[in-house]
Image (cartoon, rainbow, N blue to C red; front, top):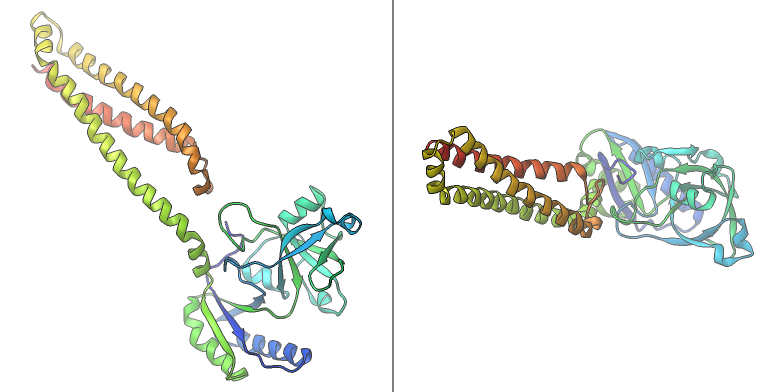
Length: 342
């Protein structure tokens, strides 16, 4: 779970704004947002300093009040700059507190939204809203910021394994823009480019693609590895099934003379049938038991590739055991039936 909904979101970078002052930059950024919001099909517009899962991350030191006197209390966390409405566009859940609003845009408003990971690290099970943290993001000295909200952890660098906690600071601009639509985000490409050219024909527009492309790229290495492992697993099941059937059938054929003698001395066909099936299942039970023990020990090496399932998943182990017992029953039943008819 990346913590956000990537479907229906078009992303792109805008550069070469060519402004001569901070006021002009702010005004031009506001104009870009207004033009994007007017694009037919655009439902929400927002921006961020770095897109989720674009493999890049900006870090900064942060900590609780005691870090002011003890620098060892500082931690390194991911830092992001977002305007109000960003979490709504991303469909990211605010766990506690609120999103940024107009009060956070006032000069001197030192507010921050942290993710659940940072809240747990700093305050444990206590509510983080209203508390203060120190951070060095724009000045050499630590600045106090008041926490106004706690958001679910959004993955920014990887979908697998541990990731640093995130801090979100209010800003009305970003290096990357996001436009959410109810349809296919690729349908907005032409209209979005036209809207940006109306603002400034010299704007540099790059990396225009759906946000799902970032998710797919982050999943690609693991998806390839699991696809390869799955292919070998299917081949292993087929080989094991063929081998199991062949061994049990061969054992019965080798005992045909013995079975004929037993029948000649009065053994009932049903007892012959039962004897063959029981012996076949006994051998299979020993094999499945040994296989489960081996798998239980060896699959722990796959922990880094598994998401949402343990390497000793009971359902998977049970299904495989049932599959091989079903093969064993079939492999024993057919030769046993032939043996009983000798």
